[in-house]
Structure formats: C-alpha cells, structure tokens
Amino acid sequence: MPSLAVTLGPLRAKNPVFSASGTFGYGEEMEPFLNPGVYGGIIGKSISIKPRGGNPTPRVVETASGMLNSIGLQNPGFDAFLRDYLPRMRGYGTLLVVNLVGDTVDEYVEMARRLEEVEGGEAVDALELNISCPNCPQGGMEFGIDPKATRLLVERVRAASRKPILAKLTPNVTDIVSIARAAEDGGADVLTLTNTFVGMAIDWRKRQAILPARTGGLSGPAIKPLSLRLVWQVARGCNIPVMGIGGIMNADDVMDFLVAGARAVQIGTVQFVRPRAVLEILEDLHRFLEEEGLDSIEQVVGTIK
Ligand code: RRO
Image 1 (cartoon, rainbow, N blue to C red):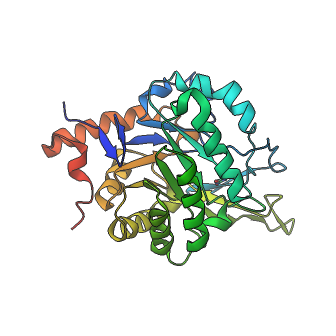
Image 2: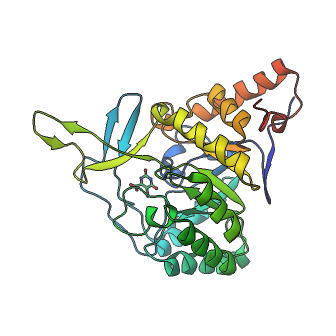
Image 3: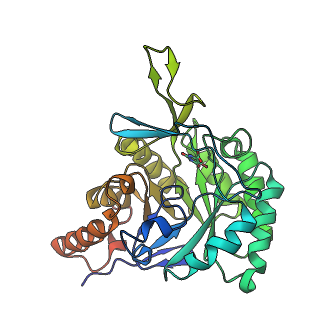
C-alpha cells in the first residue's frame, strides 16, 4: 500500500489531511461521525487568553459555492481550554495543533509560554498562530497584513516556545510572499495558507447586510482557485513547508494543492456538508497513488511543470 505519510518541517504526519481550525470545534462534535484520530492532525478552534462570546447571529450565510462566517472568535478561553478540552483532544492519537489568537503580541506569547509548562511541554505537538482572523475587532488579521508585525510576532512566540510554529496567513493582502517570508524569517516552521477571504452578503430588499458584523470570511469551493494560486506562489518563494487550505472538497482538490507545492492540507467547510469527508479523501488518495504507480504521496509535492 502506498504511503500517505508526510513530513512538515519537524512534524511527521501519518497522512496529509488535517482538520482546519474553526470547523471542527475541539473534536467532540465530530465523534458521532468518525474517530478524530483518522486525520493527519487536528487543529482546534482559535483560543484567546480570555473567553469570548462571539458575534450576534446570524453568523453564517450560504453563498454561491461557499459560505461566509462571522463567528467573532467564540471560544472558552485559555484556562478552560487547558482544563476541559485539551485532555480529550490528546486522546485522539494524532498530531494535535493548538491555534492561538491574541489582541496583542504579549497574549500570544503568554499562551505559548504556558503551554510549555503543561506536561513538560508535551501536551501539544505544534502551535498554529492565527494572524489572519477576518472577524476580530483588533489583533488577528492586523498582524498578518504587515510583514514587520508578522515577523515580530513569530519571533516573540519562537523565543517563548520549543514547539513547531505554523503561521496561518491571511489572503487579504497584495503581496503574500513578503508576509510569508517575514513569518519564515521570524522562525515559523510551516506556513498555513490561507484563512478566509473577506466578503459580504446583502439582502437588497431590506437594504441590509445579512451578517450583523456586515462582513465575514468566505470559504468553500468558491475560494479554491484563489488559495491555490497563493500556495503555488509561496511554495516557490519560501523555504519552509506550506499547508494548503481553501475549498478542498475531495481528493482531487488535495492533489491539486500538493502538485502546487503544499506538503499537506487542511479541510474545513466540506466537513459541514459531509462530516466524514476525510475518510473518502484518504481512500481516494490511496487509489490515486496506486493508479499513478507511486510509493509515497510526497512524490507528488511541488511537481507542477
Ligand atoms: O471566529 C471567526 O469569526 C473566524 C476566525 Br477566528 C478566523 O480565523 N477565520 C474565520 O473565517 N472566522
């Protein structure tokens, strides 16, 4: 059987399909559908120092080939996460990535530092820094639209943690490679590309935006070609591995991202439609490798001509 295992800098994943932050809770909601351990890795919803209640509803709108969300970072806060969610996530038996978000650099650093103290720093496998939230009043995306702020933030977290760092970038910039290089220079191990694209939906009869926050983050198949371009550009322009994310619905989409240069992918919105999508995807990836006569999925990475 061909191997789906991939290396991502210092991380080794049993397969290249991770669950994307914010589409998977902390795993528990997925348990009725599948064993969360089947993913190459799982990434929890962004955690902030203090709990956040999130934005008023409605928080999601279906759009052509996709959806907008404006969750507003609802999460239980760092202490409750450590106490009530992390122990269960550790039991899934796959790579565990904690996604962190802050209003200030110090907040990211404090959470990274405190995670080093849990179980001698062994409680999690990696940190994903959300520097790209489209729905946060401050912080979040503000870091990821400026190379200097990106570099400084990653550097400060790097100094506070021995864990591999994934920097999750925003697509809402003109020059993604300059931001990606800044994250690499700051000491990131992996680049996650990308978070959602800022968008809007209007109910014209009411003369009103559908989301109370007016704008939201667009995800789903509508953004796949946009993300694919960004992944391709960054994979060529940087020296650290890229995780591709954006509208992946099936194994063909995964292969497109790998050929473009991603070493692994995250699936998100598809899980709202088909919560067991990862199982089909893994089966089809095996089949594709057999059809292509390949021993390892890593042989596909960056093979675009
Ligand atoms: O919670 C959200 O509204 C949210 C976040 Br933190 C994010 O990073 N990306 C997104 O589309 N929504």
